[in-house]
Amino acid sequence: MKSLFLSLSFFLSLSALQAQESNSISTVFNKLNSGHPTEVEETWQKLKDESKIPFIHSDSILFLYRGNATTVEWMGDFNGWGYVKEFPNKGRKIANTDIWYLKSKFPADARLDYKILVDGSNWIIDPANALQQWSGVGGGSPNSELRMPNWKEDTNTLAQPHVPKGELIRDVLIDSKSLGYQITYSVYLPYNYKQYGPLAVAYVTDGYEYMHPQLGNMITTLDNLIAGNKISPIIVIFVDNREPVNRANNRRMAELAMNSKYLNFFGTELIPAIEAQYPVKPEAKNRAIIGTSMGGLTAAYFAFARPDWFGLAGIQSPAFYSKPKIYSLCEGNADVQLKISMTTGLINDTNSDSRKMSEILKASSCVYQYREVNEGHSWGNWRRLIDDILIDLFGE
Image (cartoon, rainbow, N blue to C red; front, side, top):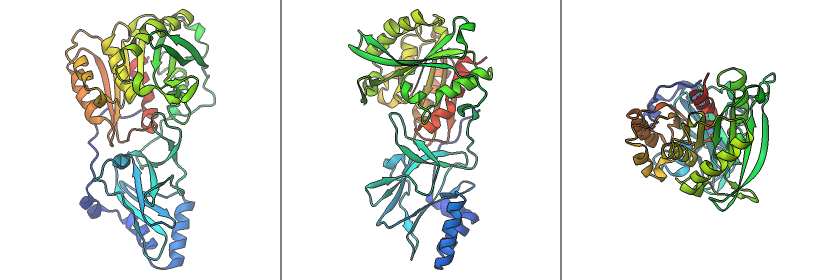
């Protein structure tokens, strides 16, 4: 479980970096910079064999790359993938070697995606780092992954051999009159679900990504939480924003941008179809909408626009900046009784927008939980917080 306290905003100062550089980092760097080819080779090989590239000590890090290049840069969550120009991301070459380096500092519990940019055009994963995380919403290609010492993997995201597995009905088609095209969705049914009677239900946008083992891996989390009696058994509807006949066409940017037609599709077509086929509780207080980024915006929009349809909302790294009118929709709704769980990363993610919404929720009659973590806009962030959201909304 992740901490509920509000972390300090991410900040990096080059002068502080130089003043506080750890002795361990200095020792490794000095060996690579010794000028003695044998010592350089032995140090490099030892680091590789022990999976210590990048080399991390406490909150300090030494990024390393070996190869022929004119320029080497490190791009990732820490510099907004190039948009945050203030972050010093350009590597320097160690004299008389083909080794490039970058020294930096991050919070000791951070987890970050990154790539290496060679000669300004060749984006590569770190060849010396085996840790990888598939990229953000709509992603499918790996990034290299940096795990700082105090970051811990959430066991709820890991498959357990003796946990009963739920059933997944994949790729059900529905013709939408509201939208004028077909939508695909998948249905998660908890293990032996018929024994429970009617169940609460969660609708999840970007459903393909939330289900994918390399991205959200939500199916595993659901199995673990239900088996561990951490949440009540629930049915989950994973709605795919990709066009069914052309999966390369992801319609999420239109569908998830406070789209009233998309909301109407859920309320008048999808929800009735699910309730006609599966044993779900029909009350809004037992129905959730969950999403990340643009889907997080949609979750807030759906819940506040139609609290008679959705009484629960899971909001991850919400893209509120894209539709600022979401604040006025949520503000001043003293009579709306919602249960909300919201999360964000602190490293070039959506924390400023999320904090603004948190203040609005604090002044409302909603029951809400809010979490911040030292991560970026990535499935590595969202996957690890799905269990918290589910427990907030459906906890025993």
